[in-house]
Length: 382
Image (cartoon, rainbow, N blue to C red; front, side, top):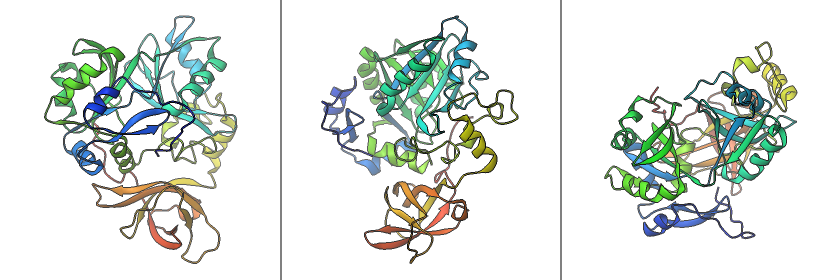
């Protein structure tokens, strides 16, 4: 997860000074100097988010606006549908949808969130991909859309069962939002784009705020006794308990949305027989896989012992099989499970629930069982 890249100087988010002041242990991540944890440590940060509210700095993510040159929102939506297999045209104002940029062979260039803000589309993309994503949008949509990156905005996430109560002290209207609702609200005097969503499986919010006001707003949130700052370590364990993918690990350019078990994200209107089937990059491959299936798919895995099985471990059909049948793409210890968890890719013959497979760890074959995800039930407010 936290690969080091010394070829370029690290960038800093608008909350960098706050992380240092609060004792954040900083590491390189996606070209940024980011906190992996604070003094309480990953375990306590994880459990605090599940019990109260955790504040995450996700300002390294990319924020991009699309506006149709015609001035019509529907034209921007139709343009974006050339690059994603999701139904953007049917996305209602004030709603957000999970999507994927696909390539010509059906692989995933990035996964992202798309919001209809009535007069424009608002996109949040992954930090490591944001430069390429912007170039991809410009290469394909510049004739129809004005594409604007928003580096002057920060992005904060407040996650956990007490997140609503904390944020409602700044604006009571947040209580009206349901999961995947989005509104433009004023919080602590700042114009914010607030979505009821997140990357933890918990109820919570993501807030796009002006960068020059981000630190002051974060300090106001952290003044609440229910809120602690949370680093990348707990963010990773929380998203894995929630069964959520990490781009570059569980998803990549060689993996289609169907292989990635993201069929649920592709609306019927974009599938064969739908109102607007295909028409996006990689549609031939993806529509064929929707109809005929795939040779592998992402699956949840529960090690039968206490030892975590990490990313890269090869998966085997038996303890003495010679050839691997798949690999683990994310793995670690689930604090709320009090047990290890993982996800990886398996052929259909071994992807049924409760199927036993084996992972090779330090020369040993450790048993795992295919398990349903999320590993910890989500608590979204629907």
